[in-house]
Length: 241
Image (cartoon, rainbow, N blue to C red; front, side, top):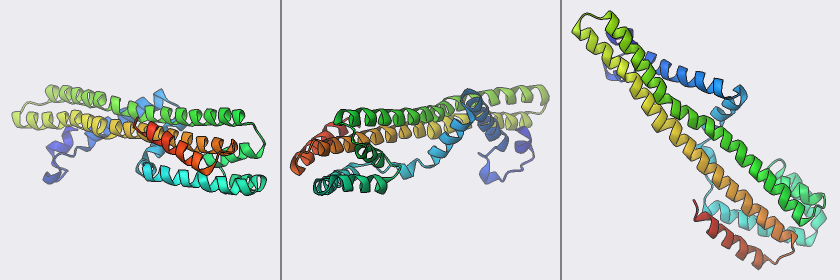
């Protein structure tokens, strides 16, 4: 840590960048999270975090399109239920909609459809919540390892320096570790975990909306009834976000 500051290996315009300090913070975070959670779950969490912004596109416009899709499904199923359900099941494949149509294709009752779908929605939400917890724990531990790196640096500095200029330079480098820990934890990982939780909640709501639409189709409701009920459901629940 001190060597980089003392011998000016980093250009002056990048004085805020201290590679050993970053290594201490990220090394500590990695060690903590890999000890606390299974390796595969940590890798999944990191991969999901890279998809953060590409998956955060659930808004009122998308929900309106979902309602329009439900009405299109209703028209196709009303013409030929067996053919339409089979085609929709293949069309949506492994997506949530495909799962619902695969259940319909096996002639489950409305109650069974609701029960199985709600279990699937809850399990998906729980898995995502566990991933978000890993990212949140990384944010919480970052400042701790920042302080640890600073304390270690201070011990080295105070035990090995005699000149005041070198002491002040080394002290500044040591304190950078605390700065990195605070910034990385409170401005990167914790906000990221909060946003991922918000995305998971929106996805949970969206899947519930689609489920309600398919249940209304199964109950042979009219297009107007389906539209009004889904709009009411959307407006009522969206106020929570």
